[in-house]
Image (cartoon, rainbow, N blue to C red; front, side, top):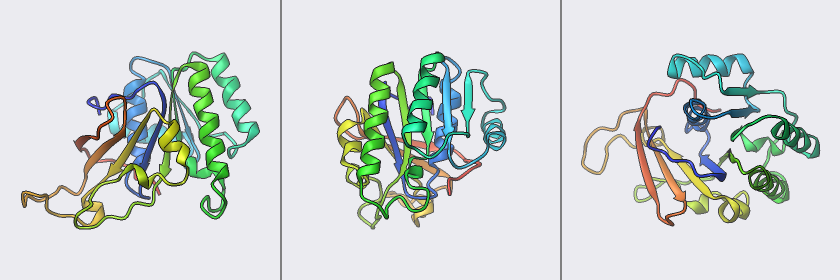
Length: 219
């Protein structure tokens, strides 16, 4: 995880359901909290379970990492609450897992306007407070024998993701998607994880292969 350099500003982390987005966020958040104040907001689990999962990953949770599982579903109230939290605390990085809470039933049954509003609001907070703000999102990726990794076009719940995010990362677990051999014919470990940097300041795709066994997989 130390090889992944997160930019300042707005960052999207996407992957198909079950790829391990939440695990990646927990690991990244705890790593960053070694040197800065980090807030992780979760709409999927309760605080004590997330703390235990981080301890399983790293042995201990950094004292600079705060976990909040009390936020309401995104709207004006949640936006104001987050803004007040950032105004009163020296937080430099915020993780929001997962942004599909935009509609508490099925986020893709509604028009894309709600997702656009969320991205716009998070871009404002990142710029206004000069912080790093990371959110996860499910993507509609379709793998084939010739296309084995996420692309920027898979982040299609909102065009604002591609246009307004300073960095976009795609998560892909080959074994989870039915690939058991790599291009050299060598077996792929079931917990091998590839992180694709699809948008960055270099304007080229970077790949970070990680041999890591996550304890927790997003559902």
